[in-house]
Structure formats: C-alpha cells, structure tokens
Length: 146
Image (cartoon, rainbow, N blue to C red):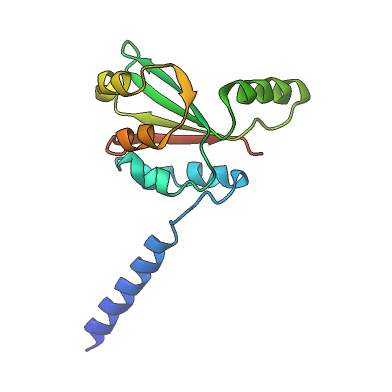
C-alpha cells in the first residue's frame, strides 16, 4: 500500500512539473525564460517551442551556412528593419537589445530549410510555422526584452 501511495505521489509531482512548462513566454519580458529552459526544448520538435511563445512573432531571418554546419532561425517580435533600428539604438544608449529568439536546428536540415525559407528574412506566417513544426531544435537562445 505504501508503494502505491509513493508511486501516486511521484506521478502527481511529475505531472505538476510538466504542466508548469506551458506558455513560458507570456510577454516579451519573459524571453529569458526560454533561455533558462533551453534544455527542455533540445531534441524536441519546433512546435513544442512555438506553443510556449505567446507574443506574436512578426518576422524572421535565417542564417544557413553549410560550411560552418549552422542552421539558425531568428524570431522577431517587430519587423526586421525595426528590430535592427532598435538594436542600433540599444548599442548607442547602452540599453538592453529588443527581444528576439534564436533557434538552432540540426545542420542536416539546411537543405530542407532553404526550400522552406527561400528568403533571408521576411514576415512570419502560420504557413512557415506549420512547415517547420517537425524540425528538431538543437538549441534555443534569447536576448533582450522590451
């Protein structure tokens, strides 16, 4: 009987821990939570990460370098040009940069990513998100806040 109670308590504790992960990034000020929990997202599909980001993603840019074996996707919460302008202002004023999230994918996916993201940057859409849902996340990094 004691063993059954211990198993039940352990199951309940694990379910509480897993449910606490939902919607880590409620606002742009929560971007650091994505970075703090990057181990949680490693080797999981991209859709798991997207599910935890509540602020609207407006734009993206991509860095695909087969020589360096890198496949990075940058997610922005403003337009790319506005994001770059805010980065410059932050550097001049020594303030934190605007929030963005960098997602590193498996380098083996570079050719597939090139087919889906045929531009270096652009407006984010549900179609792009749906196309990338099954890609495996290898790393997640976030910077700044708004």
